[in-house]
Length: 150
Image (cartoon, rainbow, N blue to C red; front, top):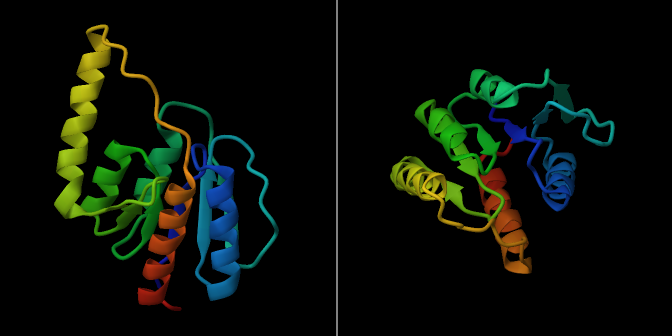
């Protein structure tokens, strides 16, 4: 049965709340993985796994647990690339579903922006989540849940 794995270190609180409600409503198992404590309600369908601190430790745990058909919640492009190779889908915090068809372009853009920052260009950070981002996240999650009913 497909599950949801959450890169909880960077998951916005509003999305965590949406995921918890969706898990309660549908019975889909949701695993939050982080290297620091995340407040979550005690539910049969919710699991929290705290991993040790360190560079990409949580990401490696997500990759290890990911299976074909799973939904991964993350905005980490290299992580997305790895789990998509395993047959999972990735939903980022802006509500964009990342698939095999789009991940390579995202990875190329990420690498390009990293090169720009390394050369001293100030690129700024991402914009705050908008109501449209929140709505699109919830809509994409609902679509995935409808296709993956337990």
